[in-house]
Image (cartoon, rainbow, N blue to C red; front, side, top):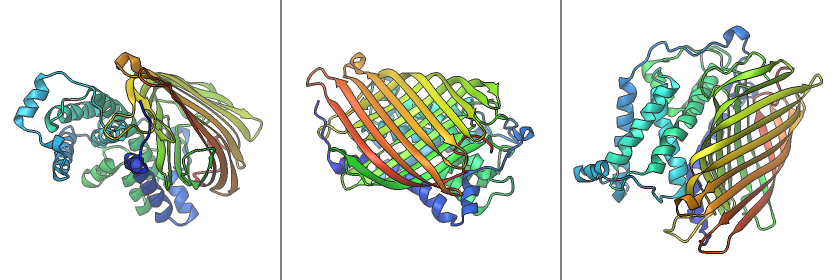
Length: 474
């Protein structure tokens, strides 16, 4: 296969991710100009052991999210028809055909299959979650909503890979939206300010809409401790890397292993989220990583502590010369060790099986699928060495392998690595330096095996939720 794409096509395929990051940055930084307000938006009040209670539904509804799921599907279909999408012109005949014929694996754009469908699934999931329903029940709403869409709303045959990504990735991303949005609403435990309500609406739009219409279905309790930062900066291309000088980034760690009061109780109350977008004259690149503890427990106490168990992962990578998307399940651990009075070492690692994923280069000829999809595996290892109040050094390596030859495609291996430092320069302000390297190797059957690689040097300014860098209390 050939791997060449126009800048315009790359920009179009990355636009949903770019819009998400830029809107988040604008709402967080622009809406609240003072430093205390910024802290209020991203960092809950200091919790106590007694405040770590299980979330309890004050009320719940199964009917409202069912109506909302149906309404979202109908509105999306009507919007697609108005936009001239022929695949949205479903009729009773196409519905019957889809209900009675075999499912397929579609060849839609990478960004549609690996980003748009998961985000759509997250909206279906949060409709149920914000109506007082639990994680697994809410995931069922995403499952049924995706099934209805695939069979009744499109003229194309129903897609197995769309059903998988919409349901599973939608649940993972949706739970992160639900929990992070509630952490922002908690703030210092007082009534949420306009800025925090606006931020929560950006993070979890369906959830905040239901909150406004029907009241809060959940008792508002203090979330686990979190660490977050938002960064903007510049990239310097190394070698023949893509020219994308503007960089923006958002990272959230919720339910920290360094918090001695935290015990994992429900899916994804321990999670890591990282979103990045790079923009330049050559187009846009970026990624979205979500990983969270589905079921697990803690080990150790105070200075040596870890949470471990079964993790769920959702990755969308559209980086320079490489792209990959995957949903995975596997064992993992997040460990924390105090080194002296202020320094610490954090280690995270997950090894996951991927029931269905996608990987490839950054573009074929127009109209030709530019990725391979099949089952595979995914791994992540992160090391962070820090000193509270001063800064941290971070090393990260993530990989996705796709066994494309099992599905009449190519075997693919994509790796993203980074190493950097972030230093505190004032309260809630930090400067960072990072070098990134990405690589992709494929075993093709009808062309020479490609080896694509790229590297960049990055300088960033960050607003941090605190000056502890995830290392626990002073």
